[in-house]
Length: 214
Image 1 (cartoon, rainbow, N blue to C red):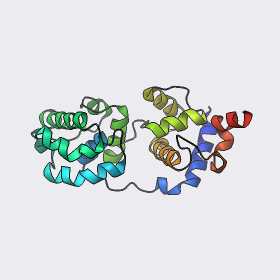
Image 2: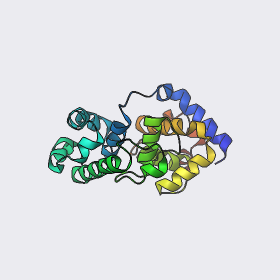
Image 3: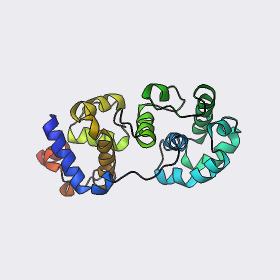
Image 4: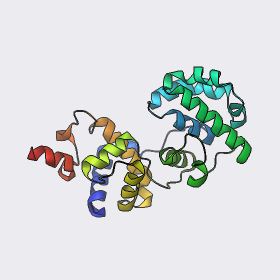
């Protein structure tokens, strides 16, 4: 897909979901953004928001979380799912922050990727929401689905999908692309029974064209 078509799709989605481009809500400190993003894997923001107050009131800094009892952490974050792994990751990441980064969350992709539980998707989200840096496009399940259906990418690996998307969109739009695709994936282009007749980009969409052929 060429950049002109990609930009036309972007403008159509932006027109449909102007609220997605409004200023981001306050997500707390960079440490809270990091830990919340790690906890958000395989669950919803609502689920993370439900446990965050208890977690951060008890462990407000990397130093405090680094010394936490894993059983206590698991009990607090249990409802987010995969709580054994997530508890290990956030404690280990906090120890590295306290030991190697002076208790501060680093602001580069390379440094963030050294933390347990942090891949490119998580790092992109942390950079965008904590530092207003767009070093890439976070590819979650919604972004992956939209990219494949419309025809932005034929890849299945998130890193390769990110490469394809950043290749056709200018850097200044990367953060908005992520937000718009997620919004579109939740509203219309759902995993099951997408509402194609209501879609503002259906004429540009490979998935919709194939449906019409069928």
